[in-house]
Image 1 (cartoon, rainbow, N blue to C red):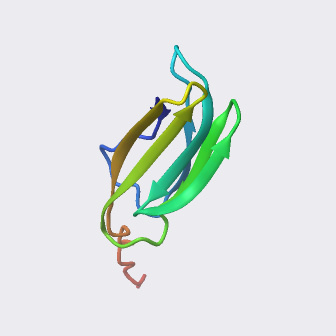
Image 2 (cartoon, rainbow, N blue to C red):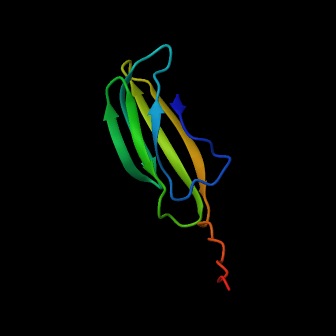
Length: 97
């Protein structure tokens, strides 16, 4: 149903788009994407994409919930959990002598 980035690695400070594909036996009428329970995007049309912005969020897990309404009235739902991690620490620079 949805093409989403991998959940295997930290995606902290990342911004990406998810692309929702129509099932073989239906066409998307509308789609709603939520992050942390808040609506991020509501889309209509054939090529449905939605932005997901995890930049600046604290370390932890966040769920992206997707609700798609098909033209025949069926509702398809799905979710994916992403893990953010602490920003990488820069290596301490040693002063040149």
